[in-house]
Every structure is written in structure tokens, then in C-alpha cells.
Image 1 (cartoon, helix red, strand yellow):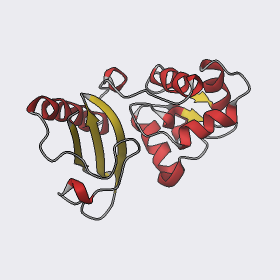
Image 2 (spheres, helix red, strand yellow; image 1 turned 30 degrees about the horizontal axis):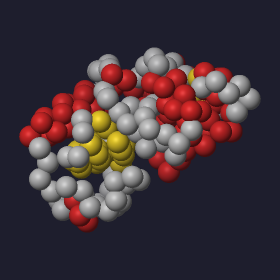
Image 3 (cartoon, one colour; image 1 turned 30 degrees about the vertical axis):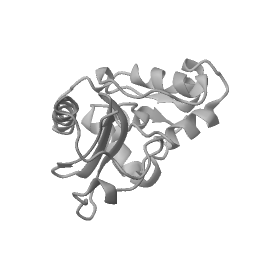
Length: 180
């Protein structure tokens, strides 16, 4: 299984990280201002399901896919509406509910939001809003499974270590009127 781990820079946002295996995005870390990322993938943090060391010699085919995805991400952060929901991602989850959350979120259009309760209902478990929140907190596919489009019943809700200001900025970029 060729695995490619690539950092990318987005002006005004920071450095993001993308991990691809067999032409599926398996991990995406949103751009964030941080110290220079190591060029040596073996010095990068472990990603769930991949272990600590990433292959050093990826196939040319995998590299082409990674570059295409990075182009889409750059277009997204430039305010263009690329269809990130069409990018193949690893949706292998331990429960059908979690898979349902991911699938439902990929269908929430750019510029729209759902509440945690609505996400739970879309995933087939009405009343499981807290479980939907836990899913979002563990999301490993930022932007490809757009948890920033999930809001609280009365406010925007949180956005983990990135914070609500980052969430607001993503929603504003997508044209959501309630972001400001």
C-alpha cells in the first residue's frame, strides 16, 4: 500500500498535512500556523491506523493524486468552490453510526450547516446529538468530512483545538451568513 504524507502551505492560514493511502485521503490536518514541518516523514507524528513511519518512496501515481488534492485544497482556501466531497476518502469506521455521520456530512452543501441533533438524525440515530459531537471531535478528515458545518442548537459551537474563530473563518469562506 503506497502511503504519501505531504505538508502544504496556505498563505494566511498556515501549514496543513495530508496523508493518502491507495489514492484515498486517510488523514487531513487543517492548515495552522506552526513550526516548520520536518521533511523526514519518519519524524512526523503517528496517524491512526498508519503507524509512526510513512513510506519514503511513494509511487508516481499516488504522488499525482496527492498533488491534485493539494490543488483542490488551495482552491478551497482561495475562496473557490472545489468539490472536496468528491475526493475519495477512507470512511472505514468502527460503527455504522460513525460511517453515517461521515456520509451525511459529505452531503451538507457548502455555505449550509446542520446541528448536532440534525447530523445524528441524518446518520440514522435521532437523539444521539452528543454522539454526533464526539464524532466531530475525532474527525480525521477535516474539510473532506466538513465538521465545521455542524453547529450547536443556539450558537456555532466549538471547533476543538482550532477554536470557534477558525470555524467561523471557514464558514465565512464558504459563504455561510451566520458566520459573522
